[in-house]
Length: 120
Length: 110
Image 1 (cartoon, rainbow over the protein chains, first blue to last red):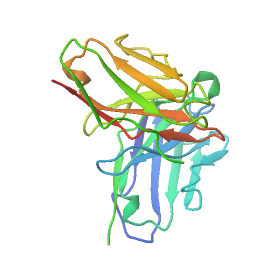
Image 2 (tube, one colour):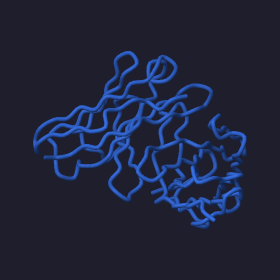
Image 3 (cartoon, helix red, strand yellow):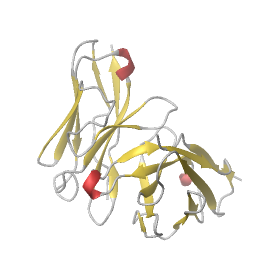
Image 4 (spheres, each protein chain N blue to C red):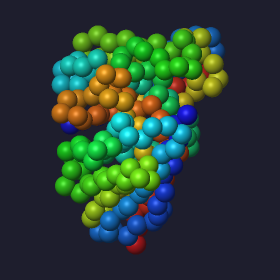
C-alpha cells in the first residue's frame, strides 16, 4: 500500500517562498509520477504540477512562473516550492501519485494534506 | 483554462440513485478518455472512485459508475448510502500533460 505524507510549515509570510516535502513509502517510487494539488478553504481542487522520478517536470501554466518541483530518489521524496506567495495561495496542499497514460492518468494515492496559511 | 462545470449540489434518499454531471470542452473532457472522479469527505483527502471515464479501482463498490457523452462526463451513485454523503470532483486530462478539476458537487443523502 502506497502512503504519502506531506511536511512543512503551516504559516508563510507574504512574498516569501512556500516549501513542502512529500515522503513516499510502501511502494515503488522510481517509475512513477508525483503531483502536487491544492485546495483553498471551502473551494475546489487545483493541479499544481508533477515530477517524474527522473526529474522531468510539468506545471500548471497559471502557476508555472512561481513553481519548482524537485525530487530526491534516495529519500523517496519530492518537494514543492512556490515563490512570491500571497493570501490567494492559502490552501491545503496535497501530494498524490499520478498514473501515467497507459494506466489512466488519474491520482490514485493521496497524502492527508498540509494546510498552509499565508499571513504576516 | 477554466475549471470543469459541475452542479453545486445533488441529493437523493437512501437506496435511490444520483447522477452528477461534469461539463468541459473538446480540449479536455471531449478530447480524451481520461476523466476521473474523486470522493472527498470533510477534512479528508480525495479518494479516487472512477478513472478512464468508467473504470473502478479495486475496492470501490460497483454502485459507482461513470460515463461520457461529448464534452460531458457523468458519475452515477446507485443505492445511495449514508456514507456516500460527500463532495465529488471530476478531473480530466487536458493535453500537454495538464490536468483540470471540476468545481465540485456536494451530495446529500436525505
